[in-house]
Image (cartoon, rainbow, N blue to C red; front, side, top):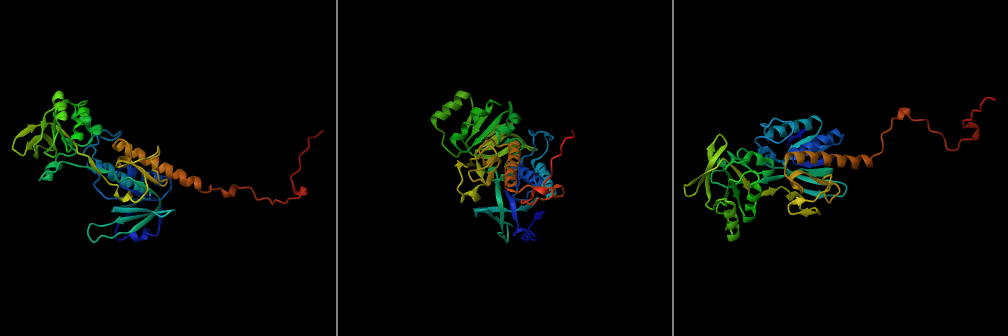
Length: 348
């Protein structure tokens, strides 16, 4: 059921088996599996996550390469709802461990917001990340190319940049090292610092040794048409031709709501076991929030793993269901010998 300000009161007294924070590919995969395991779940989705901005799913098995990420999400949401999942557009403010349950506080509505608290036995953190993009005066100019010819994931989209003139847009010297992996796909790399930091003499030499130009002026705008990049214009009016670009400026991790819990972290990522279980036995983390590579296919698999682990926990703690009509009648414990079945003697 789709929840909103108008009807969410009907679910505030319900204890869900699982609340899923995030309605991206991983969260929706988990919801579908949980509902098929006959468990109850609520998906809380803030909207416009990383997979929403993918314009073409060119590396996902079974889908046409021109499938937009939002189509995958819409289909996944409808599938989960058809199986009985609840779905709420909102922003999770906090998760509190109450012992047997979690209390999940959600901000609902950008204006006249309300803050309902839902409860569940388990929580799946699937809230993901959002990539930092170059900050220009006209951000629409960035959005015209982001997800098309301006990429954020080399693992996902290195193939799309193969042997093309590529701009690498960074915000720290450490991120320049991406160039020395990107060259597997293309050696025609120009590094843009956007005037955000100083580059050391050692890094300058390394770039020169590889033949990679270093551009330190701020960017004024991206050039191109129909989402296809042809270059960039710099603050001084000069232009540099490009065919594609990779942004390596880090990401914001949506994990603030977990900071009040005693969890094991590695940087911004949660440490999990092979079934995506964190150091808290009833809290799981999927996709970009846990250690690993950031791909839709991984997040979808993580959703299936986490849902299955939760089902196993709940199933093992529940009594078996009996087919009572086929049970033998109960025999009293103090039966006399006369009432017991007698052995059948063989004929002589």
